[in-house]
Length: 82
Length: 381
Image (tube, rainbow over all chains, first blue to last red; front, side, top):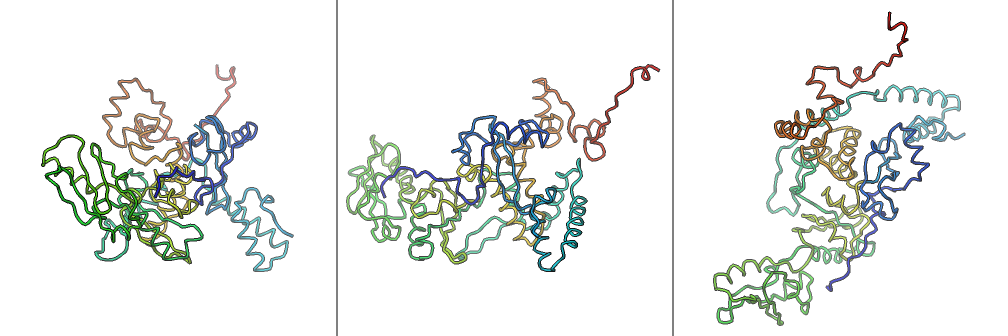
């Protein structure tokens, strides 16, 4: 076996990884208003998290995560990028 | 007439779907269905957890009680070609403490479509995954005292079973510092770069024996097995990052039970999913039943900071804002001393510190505050 270049893995497509989406500033404001929280209070996601690699997210952005839930079928979740 | 989820925004999709299918089954009229929805909405509202409920305590109790019924030990069966997996309480503790080095790390290696139904191809990939050390592919080691070098005679039959081609240069693979490695067709010669005594050479031999030559590091066992209609490979030892680089491995489904590796390779959401699935697996294997919502809460708490944090004093408990809350968990002196040295302020916002102060706790009926706008004139009276 030759030493080969590490293959880039498309983590985003993995079965364990739900869809991640970067919210626009407006959407972010809306979300914070509906839940009556500040973005500091949101759960966090690291800016170098493999699942948001392609989203070009910077600290302060809010990521919407389309989780599948056993109890509610779909459960949107929000994380602030740090 | 079909009801959409949006007609009942307060109800979760799951419930709406269930009611829909049920109403089809029972052939409900539109009027009956409307009544059913009203009833469902009411019942759902009643079943909701009220604000200020101590859900963390309920979760703790819900895990604590079944925990008393769990297996306390892992049993090993000699000679059985099955991999030992930490089960029961020890595994549950491993998951929730987010142990850095779990006792039985495991990877479920799924394979790409062209390999997954072919048992021979699976075996080939399986051996190529296993970590192979130099001593496993040679007939023996000997020390050549006149040339001051170690000689290892290659075993070509063994090399073949490990899927290493005879002409492949193992010499480059041996990464031990301070030695020259030469390979001929049947021999690998290892010579130290500096002059050494025979005794040192002997030590070096022991080191060389364990030199990594082939496979994926940390994978100590491989076990191909059938799952559903396809073959997968179960490994003991986990090295998710490297295993995904192996040809034929399906990078979309392969998963590890190691939380940190999952978080690193697939991100925090995948780690959350693994925490949930692993915890559920333990509980189910023990024949117990804990509501998923409790597991979900724990998984959410453990991943809330963007990285996996265990429920230990090094993890989320150690990050509590209140000094008194931290001190009440473990190592109280350490927390109190550092807090007083750094002049930390405790705003007494949470439960445990208020219990200590003999004050009402912000939970349940103690949560709501009354805001009164006093009339200035009346107040003076």
